Amino acid sequence: MLSRLVLRAAPAALRSLPPPLAVGVLHATRALHTTQQPLAPLPPLPEKGGEVRHGLIPEELFKFLYPKTGVTGPYMLGTGLVLYLLSKEIYVINHETVAAICILSVIIYGVKKYGAAVAAFADKLNEEKVAVALAVKNKAIQTLETAIEEEKKEQWRVEGRGYLFDAKRNNVAMLLESNYRERLLLVYNEVKKRLDYQVAMQLLRRQKEQEHMIQWVEKNVVQSITPQQQKESIAKCILDLKALSKSAQAAV
Amino acid sequence: MAGRRAAIKAVDWAAFAERVPANQKAMFNALKTRSDALSARLAALPEKPPAIDWAYYKSTVANAAMVDEFQKKFSALKVPEPVDTQSAKIDAQEQEAAKSTAEYVQASKARIATYEQQLQKFRSMIPFDQMTVEDLNEAFPETRLDKEKYPFWPHKPIGDL
Image (cartoon, rainbow over all chains, first blue to last red; front, side):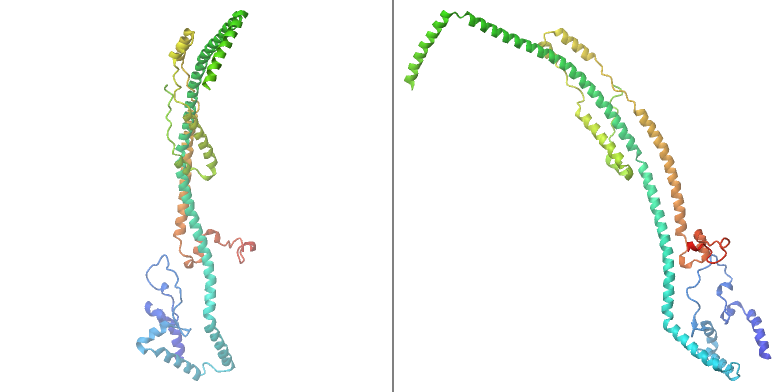
């Protein structure tokens, strides 16, 4: 009866303890709900759960009991509790106990042997998901950055429009200038052609006149040679040739 | 001679070529070849035609009066300069280009601003392994599952899985 009273009074007693001590008790709530500091944004959840000994008993119990009972305190407590339960037959040993022992030993063996591997596998799956998301995010960042670069480049390109118009104006100026020069050249060529034509005409005329005159003179001279003169000139030529041949023979 | 000698500004073709985007390279090349052809033609023509030797002609040609007449008319002749019809158009084009450029640059700046904003959002996101599902839905609204439209798991059409 007294024990029932204790059991009922326990929760009230727990609440009456000052907050830091309430942390150390078995039904420990997280520090977040009891501390006074306002935390916003919330810090990220811790990676690992609280430290646990033998897979069941939180480390806080050992820390809590250490000042009063030293290192063996919690173990003695545990042993005492177990012996109490067994001796008072609060826990009855029956065939279910044997089954429990077998099942638990198999489970513990399995967890101990393959626990790490399975955890690593599960972590890898999660990692892959996160990596995919991260890759997407990085790609998005990169795309945005290149887009910004491209925009800036296009703005720079657009600044060069002055070149285009300069080139166009240059073209027009060159065209006009060359056109003008061509016209000047045309005028010059035409005038020169006409003057040269006149000069050429004159020269040709002169030439033709000269030729005609020469021919006419020749014709007249030939006509004026009488047959008598022809015979005389031929005889003279023969005499001259004889004299020349004599002197030539002598030379040879 | 006032309109002549419209200054031919030296165009830096290399710098010009840098600024031409890839899809307009053909146009640029056409412009360049045309420009080069024109400047070659201009360089081939002498600035002034050679002077006519009137003394020689006067002494050679019999009809000196004709030569004199030619000479007078030649020196009195004014060759008309070709009329510039295109410069005004080019200037108008330039004004238009300036306007559309300003618009484009403004639009471009607006685009850059949106990009910067999104970039900021991405850069200031918390790392994925510290996000909850609500954080994820906040950061990427498209991941939010519509629990009203599809009340049963998986809260989206099966085809979207």
